[in-house]
Each structure stands twice: as structure tokens, then as C-alpha cells.
Length: 405
Image 1 (tube, one colour):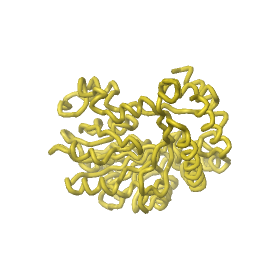
Image 2: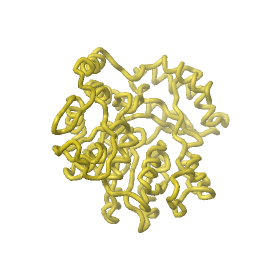
Image 3: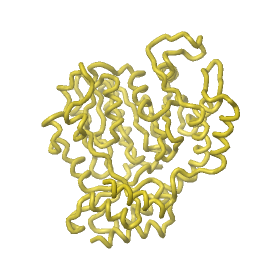
Image 4: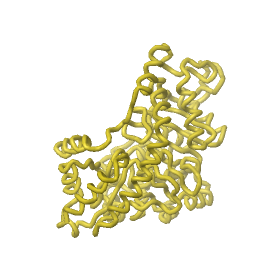
């Protein structure tokens, strides 16, 4: 795998680099250094201004009322879960096909993740399988808009409302995604965004939470800032909280990146449509299908699924290596959560009962998660910056894949 990773890094030289930065980003960080205000302070007494302005600007961009900035996209999920009173003994339904943080954040709150299989065409949570996973212990659902492709949120919210469940949208891949006229993150109670270095909107590290409920927004701020209340005495800690504040440096560079985002987002959607068409013209290849009703897609990654028997029986690893060796950057897909060592071997938190989970030991057999296990075995994905390429480069990608047959 080390050699494969070396090929990938070499291949990325042939396509647009990421992150894309300019003098505006440098000046934004330099201004923080010069100001001497290297942290945000508190709402009542600002030290720096970038965090507070970023919250306003991102809320406006994603069409939400409130935004809370924290230091990464894992603690956004933990903050949302804790603020919605998810805790000991509760179950939270998450998709099996996602980065580990979606499941580990549930573990961090002393709750139990329950894994849901995916739709074979859209590769996101199969909403039709959710109700079968609901038990009296279920408290919340975390749909993940994988690669920016939205979960069928209108249907999911009908199920959640019928069972009085909270919904936290994991939008780590979905900045700018719009589904049926509404930005993702606004369908459920909370939207959670990552700003990690590879994301389509980045500050190197960072996370953003959005919501449309004033009381919930205040609870999230309090949890992420040591149990403080907005506008109250700085050393009054009213409830349990921790320190998840984002730094002024990260906030400053994210504000500069947010200004660049709209034209990049538009180009990714244009090129994503082009690449989808070209890949779907190849026998035995299928690009990810956007969920019907998708108006805009964040396109953090671009997965495609192939039929090995159309490619001389090669594996996903073989396809990955062939692409990277040819100078085409290709990323690993996330291994399904049910097979990861921490869940399969139940190496989690002491004192928590995980026996009712639908994973662990024999329950983590791939046969119990047939769709995601199949898709993972024959899919690879392209990084988001590939969709900032020109059409000739993308045509070359499709031509090379065809040449492997």
C-alpha cells in the first residue's frame, strides 16, 4: 500500500493541486498574526473577529439561521449528539459506508451506533432499510451525504418524525449540496461540516455546525465552549462542556476559501456531469448516481463501480494501482464500518453494553451487509480536485479505463 500511495501522490501532479490558495489566504493568516488576537474570545468580549464572522458568513451561505465553529468535523458530530441529549444506552443509526468518525462520534457519547446498508446506485444510506433498525432504544439518525450525494432526506424525515427521532446530517462531504431546493444540513435538527485539508471547503482542520433553532444553537455553543452561556460571565460554567473552539487562524483561512468556493462548486458540478456521462459509456462501469432531486452536489469524491469480469477479473486494488501508475489520482474508498477492527472486535469504551448492536464478532460478517460489501469490493473513487480539470483530461481518464478491458 505504501507504493500505491506513492503512485497516488505522483499522479496528483498531473491534475489541479489541492488546496488552491493565493495571496488572499496568506494575507488573511498574516493579519491574524499581526493583530495579536490569536483566539476568538467570547461572544460578549471578542478578541479576534474571524470566528464570529465565519459563523455568520457560512450560515448565510448554507441558508441556515445559526452556525457554530469548532476545531474539526469529528467533534461537530459529538457536539450535536450531546446537545440533542444522546447518551448512555441510546442507539444511533448511521450508514455502514462512511468515514469512521460517523460511528466513533456516537461511541464517544456513550451511545451505540447501528449500521445501515446502502443503496447500490447512490451509495448513500438506504432509507428504506432504516425503519427495520429502529428499536425502543433508538434516539437519532445520522445520514451521511457521501461524496456530496444527498440522502433522500424528505423520506428520512418522515420516518424520523413518525418515531420521534433526531436527525444529524453528516455533511462533511456536502458543502454546497442542494436537495429538492434546500441546502443539506437544514433538513434535520443539525448539519455537521468538516473543514479538513482535503475537503472542498477547507481551513486545514476545522468543523462547522448549522441549525435553525435558537435554543439548540445556544446548547451547541455552550457544549463546545466549556459550558458557558452566550453573553454571561466568562468563568460561569453552567453545564458540562469541553473546549472545541476553532482558532482564529483556521477561521481566517476558511473565510478566504469561502470566497473562492462558489465558482469551484459550479465547475465541479459541470465536470461531474461530464465525467458521469463518459464513464457510463464504458461497458461494465457505472458512475455514482446522484439521488433524484439533487439540484447541486458537493462532489467531495467521485466514486465509480466496475464489473471485474469486464476487466479481466481485476480487483479494486488492481484498478486503483493501474490508475495511479498511469498518472491518474485515485483514492481508496472507506472500508465499511462493520468490518473495522474497533467494531468487529468491539474494542470500544469500557462499561458500555454493545451486545444489542448489529455488528461485532459473527454479526460483522459481510453477508449481513451485502450491498456495501459488494460495492466496496469493486469500486474506487477520484478526489474532488480532479473535477477542476478540463474536459480533455477527464476524457483521457475515461479512455484509460476503457483501455483496461
